[in-house]
Image (cartoon, rainbow, N blue to C red; front, side, top):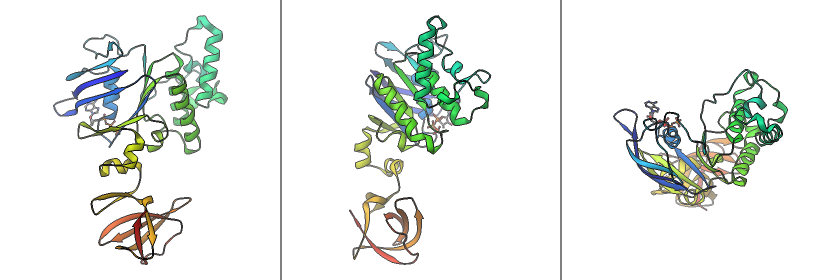
Length: 302
Ligand SMILES: Nc1ncnc2c1ncn2[C@@H]1O[C@H](COP(=O)(O)OP(=O)(O)OP(=O)(O)O)[C@@H](O)[C@H]1O
């Protein structure tokens, strides 16, 4: 269990995080979301022991995570951290980078483990390629595999798929999160992307204004977003009569009290996102066809 108790931290005078408390069980995945600058990376840095806390405590099982004031070397054997900068060795190959911290004493194990991780991050074809010639997304995958190479109990990932192209992203996510679950590795992921969360995370916390605004399952937060900030993480939404309504929850009907003048249709693949005007306010809803601008339609919540 990871236990964070009443954590507060500031780089200078202004507090970045205040009174943060949460728990993550072994093998669970906690997503940390929040607007840019809300302190997601700072929280991961603190969990890793990179800074000293102003207040509070962090424990992994019985081990207290302490900052540089108490530790000569930052980090613990049971924890790995993949930063936004990957810190790879550019002049050696992908497989050498992944196996960098694995003992040469167990050559066969090292080879097998490296091969397994190359498969997890879908880079088997690049095993012998020098890292300096890789793209940003490929480097990100090497960094992930390297962090997983040595047995770890907990892994911290900061925007882990941000550099990966859309062709690869979905299968890579499935592969990495499956690996983490299968190996009972606790994982804390800071992300802007709902696709990193939905279908994978056990819980998510939303950082806002130095605090945890909510801590709940993605499903509960999606179905019942208490604030526009939470709803905005999941998709386009409207506030109509103080009610938060996602664009996909509105349908066009013959007649209703919500008369909307269409302003624009955006092609989204299997549907169109329609922008309209409802008594001077912009409203978004989904529709299977493109709608003509300036036409009026009536909307109803599904
Ligand atoms: N090394 C630092 N020194 C001083 N202030 C910092 C430092 N790193 C971050 N900050 C400040 O702390 C606040 C939180 O930053 P942080 O990087 O944790 O946010 P974030 O939620 O991860 O943002 P993003 O989503 O843009 O990565 C910001 O106001 C930022 O300017």
